[in-house]
Length: 283
Length: 182
Image (cartoon, rainbow over all chains, first blue to last red; front, side, top):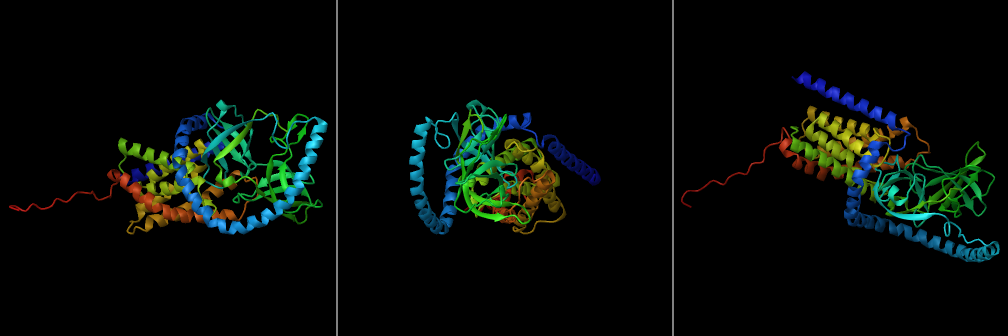
């Protein structure tokens, strides 16, 4: 009797392990399958309700965490404010000059999105992946709201990621901190171009790679999406979306490139509302 | 564990509620830059209460639901959680749980093992970006959070599943002796 039980248990375990490997083999690298879309569609109303119900508790815990960190952040922000004040004066001059140039050229588009063909759809984050090995969000807007796969996603502060799959009333967003993410970007001023990759496990650090070691990049410089276009190929992100600020640059030994570290403007760890830029042309 | 239809419904409800809580609450709340992961804790608790089979099946199902909801490659979370649940169940079958401290400690150890499992599966599938040392901090903190979360989760689940537990003493209300003529 006991042996029979052990045999049955081993058989079930083997079956489950084989099933897991089979599922991994069949679905790895594929876009969302029918099963996933179906389950996600069924559960998205439940997730929305859970999100609303749990928001006060989330906010309470976040308040404690933020208060704990606020003391250290205070002095950093003071330094940052002093630096920003200097930059703001220079920025005002640049904006004035920019407006004059736009009038001259007859352009009506702003630096990033104003007047662009994009139609922003605001969505609420309803779920987030639990491990550092995949940085994905589920939002409560989907194909029914005009969202398409590869639409860029932003928050009030900057670039967040892009839509990786969609269902009728929900969609999944792959964040710029996910290991599969790569964003072509440039450093301002100067226009040095590179590719932004995540540093897995540290959502407050991104790496701008493939930058010529002879180019001067220093902390405090802004990084925006470069939005390139070559014939039929184009970047998935429009040009000029703010991504982050350079924190440090280091030359890679025995290579002719340097790694530039940046802190994303968007608070990737605490996203509640995001905007999906639908309907635009890339690049 | 004696799995009757009612207990099966309870187990399914536990799995769904745990996944919804994880994705909608725990994954989005950060303490010390790390979010807690209750799924290994729930799976380990079910394994400790129900045995290796219950742990493995619960782990597989909960993992599958997570991967479906986040549209991740299917099977990754299932593989890790089924291993964690099976090991918890094996522990329960081989040793007696004498102290109330044992379940939280097992949850902590197996959560750490689960985190290492996720890392191993990801390395097996390929990592396309540099990995920060902070991943280690994330793993350790998740295990510490698991220790504290295991208290309410394990004892709460034991209460919910009490009718199905084989070695759980029945709770009977002692009748007060009647004193005749009082």
